[in-house]
Length: 486
Image 1 (tube, rainbow, N blue to C red):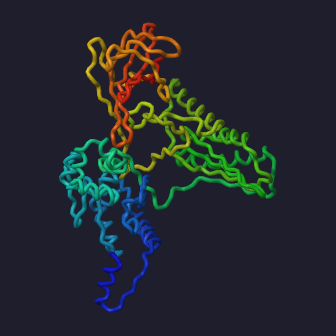
Image 2: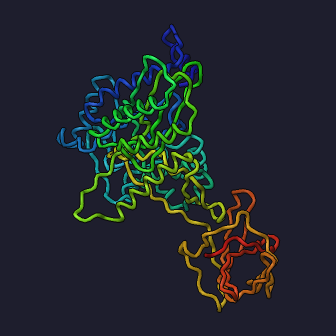
Image 3: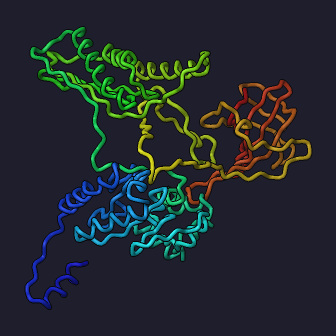
């Protein structure tokens, strides 16, 4: 409560002492309670992988997440397990609220199972009905106070009211956080628990009695350290996703190397080869006295049953992974990229590029709060009435050219009518006469994104058989070449 209100209440009793809030003490007490809860779950924490403090109270987190997958049967059912948890906290002097569900978002808002006064209430199995029956309020979505206030001003107080609104409108008005929390509540977005006790770190270190400048000796030590880490990972059925190496020398900055892998691997020879590539390109410090290697990111290995006849596709997939790892190790992780689709109506902004290797792909943390994110990205596209001599526009991605000009090239095009399709255009000093065309397809951007773009796109085929993707900008009527088909 505010200090003024607390002082007013305390003055009625005489003495009044104001103490500053100790956030560290609260987290320490929460950590103590998390350790006690490890008798109920092997995975206990108060944060998730996308943890954000914007929905925490001012005093910090006041909750615990427990992964109870397969644990309920050890206590005679999940209802008895939760009742035991409540009794355990009552002995500690705490009165708690508890909920169990298949995801963290639904457990926070009540989910399929809601505990009240140690009585188990089961909602309808249908997700939409479950939301209505549990009367889920907006605050159960763990949204920032500013977002909750804006939703209240718009008269939106229930989760089911958000489901009736278009996703693109929610994204433009409230951002990605609202859609993420809604997907986590529905179970279509992934959310995993960050354990209170971090997973074991796989690292090995070698301290030299006498510093050395020998590159050959350094490679031998690195080979032995990699063997140690691979030996530790083998019993856990885990592989390295990102490997770090540190070389400390006398009187200089330590050399830090990082190796990212496309797929988890615990093969000693493969890891040694990737590190050796990094060492060959690096300038080693003088008088190296300590060498350390750590597996910063690990993930479960893929176990496949041996087959009687070799599968060429499986071998090709393995060879492709090895090629990606070697290229990234030789050229750097930022030189090996993959396209990532983005939800943007403009074609030139609908894709971005991200590194292929070194990304975290942990899937071993499963159970309560886990899920698979499946978001369909749609472009804001409106199809106009097609001319009689043109075929319908295909909605599949193959209707788009593989090569795009960025930025689009300005063209000098000729059309019969001002708003009609082109009949010819000038490109690379030549006149291209159009034999067939498909379109128009209008692509627009929303007004909330600043300057709007309105274009009419045509797929055209010239008399020589070449196909192009051109558009007319509605603001000034100028034609542009945006793409070419193979």
